[in-house]
Image (cartoon, one colour):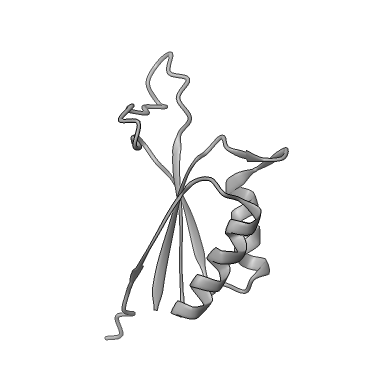
Length: 101
């Protein structure tokens, strides 16, 4: 199995639609087994500028991460299709194992 993590800003749009909403619906439409969207408390990217959206008088965009797990071939196929619609964000993947007790 492979896990993908997609890092974006909460306020990013694709057209007039929130990007996180587009990505989650995209994952549903492509029959991904499951996904979760997380809103970050604080973060920074390659620009090394700290984003602290909950501080008073801060206008920083909150960081977000969408993560999903599926079979490796499915994850790579879905990410390739997603990149055809949206070029931004930062995406990583890594192998995972499902724990069964």
